[in-house]
Image 1: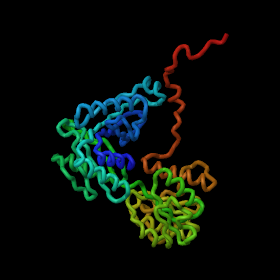
Image 2: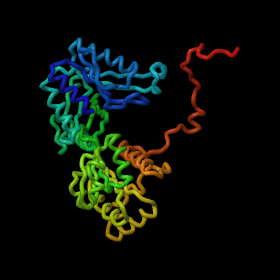
Image 3: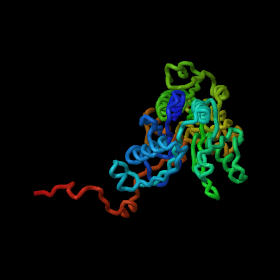
Image 4: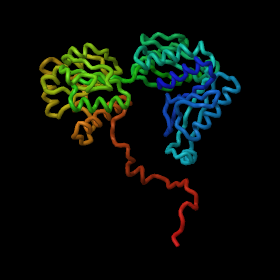
Length: 377
């Protein structure tokens, strides 16, 4: 996402006219989800994607019309039928809602785009509430600060309260949502913050495998170990930071937030106890503990005897990972990172295959031409 807004800043700097098309709402199966964006310039170049196919082609055409007409914005519903999806090689048949903004006012947009880039680099945190409806408010926005302050309150106490409450949650997790209120008020609310942070307590074989994979799917990595040979930039080149310290001290040096994930993978029970105790005292969104069920029970018993409450223990994902029968460090890393993604996206991590009754209920449909199959002769 950062690269798209960096590109937008470059276009503003060179005084080029362009449109940003944003997916603000979806229903059913669609090629892209809310928050996806594409830039369309007056020179007909594009940056980013809305999923390709006829969807992208039609939005490209609408953006060109917007640039030609000089209108500030356009809100458009787009229904993707199964026939259209099949034509473009897509497996979807849902509805997408797009908001197109004609970016010509440099003084209005440049500070916003710069702030978004800062947030995505971890130097700011805020949420943006963009009006989609009613018509007289469409295109205007409200900035929600990390203390709940609204830059331009709507005026309806219920709406402003919702924007504050949901905005704080969206900005901490870098997520978005569509909100609908009485009197045709529709808002796309999006939080801007750095990608999620993964703090690895332990730089052993599993920690190294997890770090490499988690970095590839967008996590910012911090490694803590009390042994310098297991916490250095040569061993973890993808890490933003490596800290040589005991696990309690190391955690205190990290700025943890509700957008932080902590994985405990130390080299022994004693260190796991200390690391777990330190982790549950933080505001981290997720705490995972590597080990067998027998090991976890031993650690939990020790922590309960030390005064840790059952409620605090319930925060911990242990044994960590999805049940895929992982054995090697690399397989274990896939199991763990799969769970991290599931928690981040609010999913459970189960199989997605269709149930037998769903298959039986399918209506036979074919988008193939009658002459696709030749008769045997």
